[in-house]
Length: 315
Image (cartoon, rainbow, N blue to C red):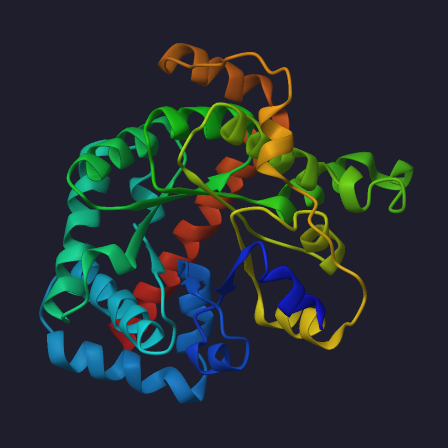
């Protein structure tokens, strides 16, 4: 049995890609997209027609509507291949506007429904800012399921659990990146690998908290830099993995055992934790890594959204 098949025994494998033609080889249940992945895909010759067809069909409509229609077009193509759900992102420029995020999310879902796709096959991605989490809470109450992204800290995860969101995406690799960059020449790769990887430790803390207190929100580790991070989180509810790392797992016969276990988490002695808005903002502010990476992630997704708009205007 290869590592990918071994992982699938206790973790739902999700493909982290807008390149839907790669998906069939790895048989993931779900797929995630973001503005950067869609931007990368539409610049490939084989996907260019999705951009031009969408622009031609809806020319004259508001630019943000054309963007959402393009995102949904990719999502619909992905859902024709996979059996589960696709995640589609709300414009990162709305990350601090609860009402605008709700409105945009509702339109994305309506566009999927117009394609005949059931609401339960769509997760709307929203940045895990305080405003994004409140938007997600509203959407969940309306039956629209959410994926809280750009999640780097325990306080973000706790607030998402309180909001009863469907799923969170803690960014393992970006946490690792920050600590490695901050340490500079003092960084010890071997000492910070596997279970000691700072990104892995962050997800394990969230996993143990959720399972210990019976929080139903799904945890989907994301943004991996190497197979070792994935192996160290085997047993997490879901892991969203790039096609390149999926290929490495499929090619390896190395042993892979469950690393995270809900029963073990239930046996831990953990304090109950809750956050109101002030407490959330202070806890996030105290976490320099999370503060830096959240801001950086929003800027990067917003920049790629602008680039995507420019491609649409030029088409």
